[in-house]
Image 1: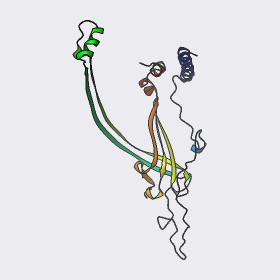
Image 2: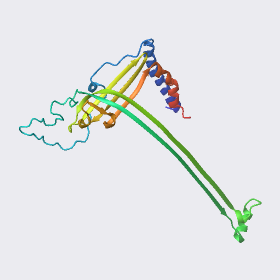
Image 3: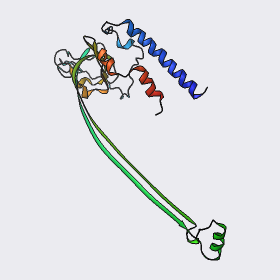
Length: 246
């Protein structure tokens, strides 16, 4: 199968997939984006329990005749999230900025000059075209240069809160959390997703934790709806951007 045939099949396949998506969108014309049903995150397609390196287990130590409960952070029952199904509030506070400016320049010049004189040189000159001299039988010059400039200027800021659910308790006591929040305003849906691993010690008395203390954090903030749809290129243009080599 030639390259043109492969490209044609790819375009037809992309058009078919896009056609199915367009059919679904046409069926929902005039309707707001549907909210996702509340479901168990562990039952979602592609869910896999987290596996992390674990320290050696330590035996529990019990103090006889003590009112202090082993593992408790307070005299009374601890209300913070500690087991599967508990709810934890995550304070998302992201303020990142990066600025890079790189300049690279390279230049190289080479020259080679080969000549021959005397009896051997004169004999060689007789065999070459008229006008050739023995002092410059071979004259090679080369000049190469390259330069590059690159810069990055990025600034991101996101501040919000979201409630997450403990989906797993690791052997060392760390908690795996996952939270999803959807907000629909008119015909635009805003979606916030957060997942990661937290230490129970980092959860404060108000049962909240800062996003900077979440290990393996996965934070997604985006939207879908009429406004987001207008901001995206048409699917035909996206296909051409992938296929066209120039």
